[in-house]
Image (cartoon, rainbow, N blue to C red; front, side):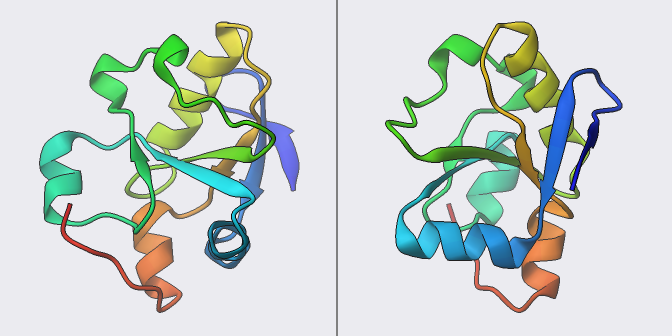
Length: 113
């Protein structure tokens, strides 16, 4: 579902199941915008860290034909990061609805970072 991001720009809300399928088939790069202390305690396997506190859209990984999807704890900071990336001229629109909390609620595993 696509809508206007509360922080500006457009946002497409992906479910944890959609993101898991993309991670499994290699079509998604998941960018976790939580802070290092949060990701050290727990993270989604395969995610890339880009903390919102020091967020630099230019430092995001090159998706190389994959979908870049933002994630956080509950889905708020990921939308903010998405708006920052769009303001920098990047063509990203997707975030994982519910963040890592939604991921765990769906029964998917996490790991210590």
